[in-house]
Amino acid sequence: MNILEEVTNILDLLYKHGWDERNGGNLSMLLSEREVLEVVKEIKITKTFHYDFDLGELINKYFIITATSSYFKNMKSDPSSNLGILKVIDKNTLGLVWGYTNGGKPTSEAPTHLKSHIERLKVDANSRVIIHCHPTNLIAMTHLVPISNKKYTEILWKMQTESIVVFPEGVSILPWMVCGGEEIAIETAKLMKEYRSVIWTAHGIFASGNSLDETFGLIETIEKAAIIYLKICDKKYFNVINNDNLIELAKAFNVNYRHGIID
Ligand code: 2HA
Ligand code: ZN
Image (cartoon, rainbow, N blue to C red; front, side, top):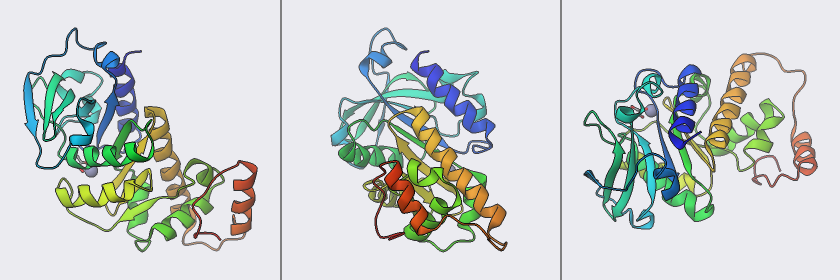
C-alpha cells in the first residue's frame, strides 16, 4: 500500500464513523522523501503558501495535508484534488509538490497542525500524524463537564479498562474558541507539549501519534470512553473502576500514567 492509500483509507474510516461531516476535520502527516517519491517522480515545487509564524524547525520536511473545504467522504475517489504534499522550503513557506489539483490550499487548521507537529517532534522524534475530527459523543461530553484536563482525564480513564493504557498521559481540553486561527493554534500546540490529544469544547479533537493507526486508535478509544460516559452519567453507578483499580492496572501493564489525577 502506498502512502496515499494508507492516508485515504484512514480518512474514509473517519468519515464512516460520522466524525467528519461535510468538510469537517483535517489531517496532516510527516512523510519521508522516499514516501513522497512513491507519489511523484521528482520533487518540483509548483506553488507556494506563506505563513506568518515560524516553521524553521520543520525546514526540508514533507507533509501530506488535507485541502481546505475538502470532504473526507471524497478523499478515496479523488485524492489529488483533496490532498496536497508539501515541503517546508523556508521558515514561512510551504511549497506544493503534489496535489490540490483544483486550485486548493492547505486546511484552515494548518497553523494548528504545523505548530503541533513542532511541539510533538520535540518530545517524540517518531511523531508523524495529526488528525482533527468531530467525534459526536466527545463533543456532547464537552457540553456537560467543566473544562479541566484533570477532570476529563479522570472520567475517561474510569469509563473503561483500556483508557489509562491507551492514553496514560491523560487528555487535555481547551475552552471554546474560534477555530482556524492563530490563537487556537498556539493554545493547542502548548498542550501538545504534554498531551497527544487536545479536546476542543463544542468542536472536536486534535490527536497526534507515530502512525495513522495509532492516532486513529487514540481517537477511537477516547470517543468510546465518552460514549460510555454519556450512557451512564445520569444514572446511579453500582460498579466502578476506582483509583486503586487504576493504579493496579497501571502496575500490571507497566504504564507510566500522569500523576496527580488518581493519586
Ligand atoms: O473545516 O473541522 O475546524 C474543517 C474543520 C475546522
Ligand atoms: Zn473542526
